[in-house]
Image: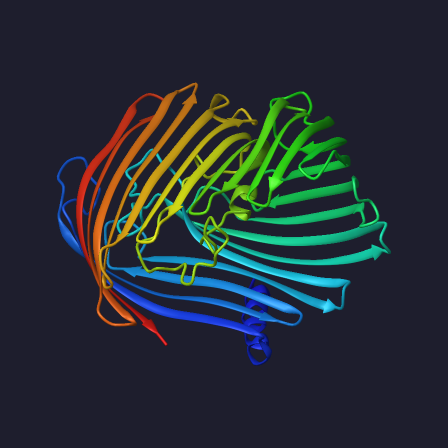
Length: 482
């Protein structure tokens, strides 16, 4: 781990002197928050003040044979009710061309906080969250080789070493060794596409049973015209993880149709069959002049390690593909909750995600929705099945050249059924705030938020109820360094 951190620091330093494109943003924000329920309790509520300071930085650098994207922020707060006083946020992505056109290296790292138990009293954001959050650090190094066999085929061989560390969670750290080998048709095949792919993912947990995922696939596709394309695939998968099934292996096949009438529109509809059954697939994207719509549906076998490995901490670009200048805004970070409970269990994740964004001249609207059904494969807790639903609506309005309004509504719902009973948790949050630009680099803001949680936690013999309401008023100051 230490070697990877040193490698990340050195990679940023090396590229400094010969960057072609260089964008660096540094800022700091300080907030004073008053809350009428600092401990998020259902009874004996206690009010109090919380001070938080968040330095943050975003960096984008491109050179002839390398590029770096880095967004980092560290929230430090004064809460003393059992939560986290330090909340790191990091997303680092880099690519290096070691030998022209053939040998490359990817270095990636993330750090984020996730809810480890949504059925206890936990705030949606991190300023006064309870102790039931986990900080996940993920470090990844991925060398790969590319070779083109003239215009007929493209070969890629990649090895990835991933180290994941979880602090404050029941799930353990892990090390993953991933091999990907793909051979795809080259430019000579204009209307027909073919591909061969091999993938192996070995996950070594520090304390529990290891998990292995291996697959062989062959794909062929045919372009009917410029707008329509049909693809088919067959394969075999060999999986080794704790499960109540008689076998986790089997043949696979799939078919999908792609419709892309313009660069603004893409629709993929398909069906695939695996060892856990068949399921449809959907991926839709359309961009209007001022708005964008995205919708996707998938069903995959996964676990906490694989989901946390691929999580996006910061949004680097918006729905229209435009870069976000300063993704680390300094506002209180949201606590991610795309898992029912952080553990080492393998499960089937059936997920539907959608979003809509509108960008006007002075107003912006964003709506996100996500629904996930996670079926436990190991039989832990009697074979639980969890359902997670998240949705949020954000509206911002530029009132004048120096003043702006922002408001948001967020709702999270989690249900988990076990032999011991049913756990359920509902969280609501409403925010409204005003921001005033003092000068080109500084701003102040005032925000009000209301939060409510209603949760039942079913245990072996009793049911523990966790609920709270909270009113919060925050005064903030932000400064961007030039």
